[in-house]
Length: 296
Image (cartoon, rainbow, N blue to C red; front, side):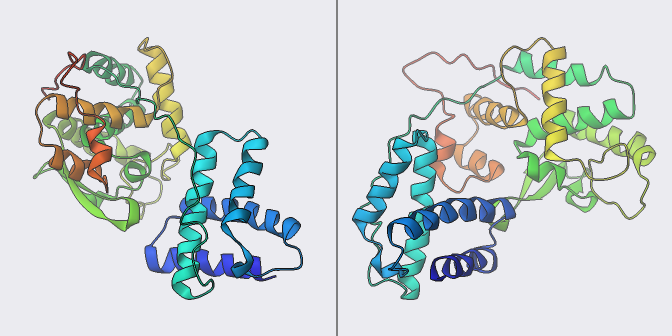
């Protein structure tokens, strides 16, 4: 069927031309598969992308709303359609893009959960109460996540060659395969050195494993494991509310800006493609900030 084959071609282009991650490709596949299923029911005799009009796309969005999808989910699906039809129009599959005037529902952006410096310190100290070598690994992992503001996926993919403890920096690959070098705080650098010199060697079973953060069996840590240990230490530290590894990224961004760091440097460290994303962490001038400056 033309619907499916064209979607497959589009997904392949995401990987080869845009270096999209597997998760991104899977998200597009799920959203577009749902849309093509809708088309197979509503346009069963007209399996041609040029027959998809603005009215057809609007009816699909309305159907999603009737099925009680949240505004944020519908907005994501609309964004997937817009990206897909832009690609179709560039390739000549459709004479014009029917989604140019397709409206997306307004999504209320919630402020990210932030920790104070005191809460961050409590979280880090709770990791130190475990027995080694795990305590050294977990403390180093949390310190690096906070100090650099890295995403979990970036941290668990760090390799030994990405760490420069003489320069106190780490190198990581973020979204779109963009590489960046991020400075470590003196504390994070010291804790990371302690882990690498005194704990990691006891956890390695495969000498060819060069991932920095490994599990007790010597393999690379998973995202799920990092989320789980973060929640575990938050509970041990008496920090209430939902807390994820991404909370450390949010908090670091806010702390740096609150402490007067240049917003462009923060954007560069975090790997934000758009400055507007970084600006949301900026303290509002009309309100007294409740964030605590970071001295480490």
